[in-house]
Length: 140
Image 1 (cartoon, rainbow, N blue to C red):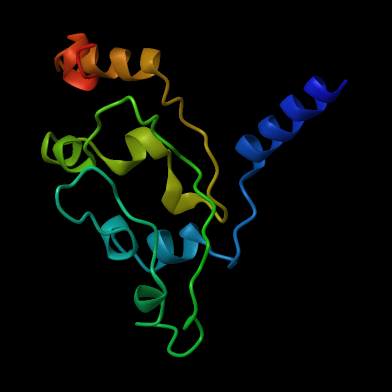
Image 2: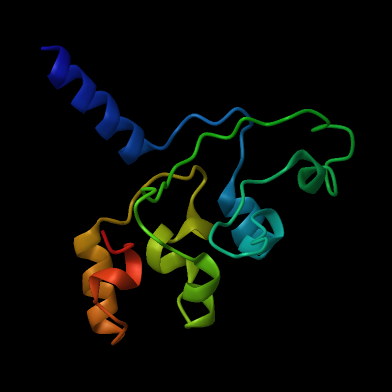
């Protein structure tokens, strides 16, 4: 019974979105206002991760409202054993929407795109990128 409840909770979080500490509409910010993803999610060197929005970024438009740390709930997480660079994927012509879905149309962010190894392999095959194991994983 406990296992079934855990599965239902995990599915609900993925399907309906995670509750965030601050209400945030991607539809308003990325859709209506046309803010680029990197405006709120910068990609600092070396480029592996897009970061979560910092209060100073929010404060550029919402002065004084977010002068405290915001503990965002991560929606997508790449396993630590996978070598992944957002920067390399963007340079190769991939879009945020390919892995994160039509975020600019969403009031609330939720996981809606499969980011499993199988999905990544299919994408690599379609785009003629390497499918060699060591392209994404360190050799053991």
